[in-house]
Image (cartoon, rainbow, N blue to C red; front, side, top):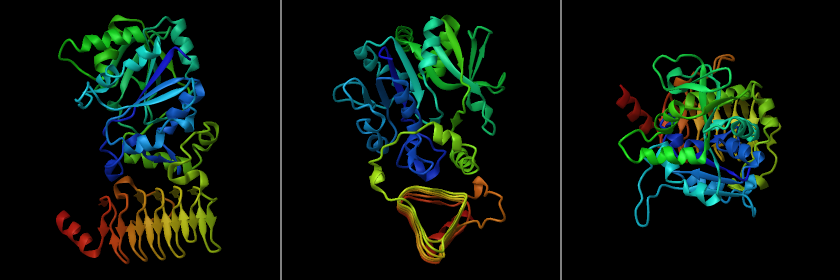
Length: 414
């Protein structure tokens, strides 16, 4: 894998996650308790033996920088393996935003040239799947391809018009690529995993700089290469998860709790930064004598003395006696105090739910709470004792939610 450089696109803005992405990139969101979404791709790269990785960051990169560090968690801090964080730049004393994904790759091609690589693997940081990229690289070389696109079947329940569609013949030669068509031609889509011949990619990126055109990879690079070069499809047989918004994020966690992804979590052997909030030194979760736990994922360092059902708890979450939490995802070090009742809540880190507050819609039977009724709570927010927060509310970061605040929100809505 020495001749392959990976560029991970990790910094795009995403407004579909409410306050959860007001201070971080989507790929830095906690996933299944103590992982982050980006862990999936970094684990794939590490286990595939890719030695040089660049992570292209832009939007609120602080959490990603802290999480990735020197790449020690994924064995990228050795003599022959390196990971590099790559923010926007154009030159000495001047910076500006990337104009699109193609522009982001173009301005970081120095990593490719410095490594003398002949292949460039371009990935998205916010997709979840398990893959060894080695067989795809072998297929690419055998086909003498300028570009190989990893494809899969369109996932159910996701808007079809947000994908790129790949049409190919019996030899897997791509004959057509359509980015976000109004009427999808079939259900074979691009996963956003692209393996380029470095020279072909460089030439196409240089051509983009000569005229006013699209600076996004699908329309500015992929479509022209399909029309003029040797492009092949590599169908992916495993499970590939795309998380465009909060609804899909919650749905994936519910599938995990239902057992649909238990095998994935075990077989993928996800690697993560164990130094994040002292994860590596957190004790095993503690369950009190009167605690009740039903179909939940509980991380190290959690203390559960109340009742939890259909929940995902990140490290350090505390649920006090007589507190009830159902159908919720609570990030690191949230505190649910005595008698509090949470239902259908997605809560960022360090939020405090004071005694006997009630947040969200009480669950009826086993039916999951709909996404429109979920309450999304920002990092460090506090819900004051006895306050009731109705379903569908969004609590800003570090907001202290009192009765007056709730009343003002209700008056504003009405």
